[in-house]
Length: 486
Image (tube, rainbow, N blue to C red; front, side, top):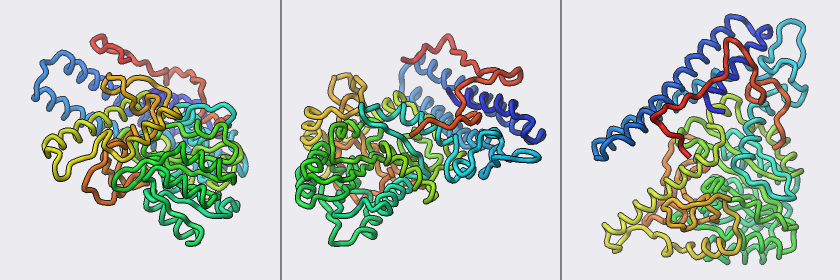
């Protein structure tokens, strides 16, 4: 469902709960919803017009410059509307909704569906997040036979990590050595250094590829913490299949905590552990990065875990106060894997073109960039691709040449690396692929980068359109001059 459809559904659900809401407030929200639907439809019309201009116009630098300016304006309008729409969608809700009342309900559109000590405090959990979690899991995480996977969203990437660490520490899971990838995001690394005694923390480099597996076999850790693409100069890539095998061979049950922000849905690490007995995998990522398609509106994080681990993480998310806010959920674009993979392919293509042109200008002398086969971990990614296909189950290639790339049955190392502080704030994405290393480089301040939804009647949860004379379902008329994009 697109933005206009979700706004229309919100209006119809509000009408259904008219007797539970103040009339004047309801009219105010409805006015805002109608204006937002009109604004989104306007952006759609303008975008189709730009596409028609691009298809009919004579290709020239002037046409490209004009389209770029118009496209930038549309993107900024869309970014602005995303925040306003999120506020309007949740305008009738309460942070502490009542589960019973003698007068007027204080539960908004969730009246009659609030469960005491479960979701009667939105800091703990709420149906908006539950619905997003179901969509996130379906879109971005491939199902793995034998694993009961669940997604949990948090207020930012660092709060996802803090929830995981809190669970492991307070449940006594870290009862032995801890192996930490040397290129792990610095804020996560600082937390672990403060939490784990010096004599129990082993920091191992990602290069050469056998360094991490050797450290695991030598120390037999209770937990291993890694970034799928290292957040340090060189964008080193851990040999994940080798790490998983080493944990299994060490013969000790161990948690592998993987920050997958840099590779997001293009890599599916749970495929690596489906037949493993000793490895308990927890994956997290920042939703402030790729998942927002460049909007950079709000902070957010996501955790994916299995079975009882997911249930415990849900409980610790509640107690640690790391849940995502309801309005924040609606400021993040709904999960859309085909669109995200196309965007990542475009970023990779542009980064490779830029790197090669820098090399050409530099004459490969003095600095420049290390690209492709010359990157220290190019061999690792090729070897991983040929042995363990745990990338996204798509097909194709950005260049059409048939080479493996992100989101195309590839493994780590053929996706993109980014450089931006986790949790929001200043965005500074480099867009460089994991197989591209800039040189010289300073230490980057990088980005950081479940269960079915409750049967609440909230517009964010219900899948059944509520018919209304005043809120008809939004129709998406396609311009005859704009063919359907495959």
